[in-house]
Image 1 (cartoon, helix red, strand yellow):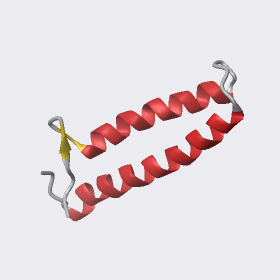
Image 2 (cartoon, rainbow, N blue to C red):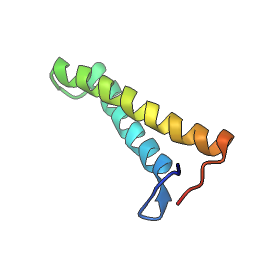
Image 3 (cartoon, rainbow, N blue to C red):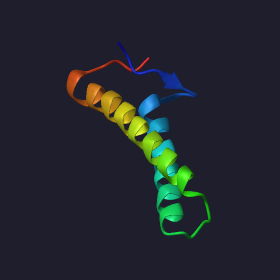
Length: 70
């Protein structure tokens, strides 16, 4: 098993950037600074959990278990 490269960067980098965008949207929609339906807020939270799990899996794999980055 290995961590794939996308456009020259490891997948963990891209998942981290996606996570920052999703968390920003979650905070802004939760504070009602941007008007989005509550169903978006709920679906976004579920997607955040999935992205966090993948990000943690690959990140911990690289850090503790020396997964190669290819």
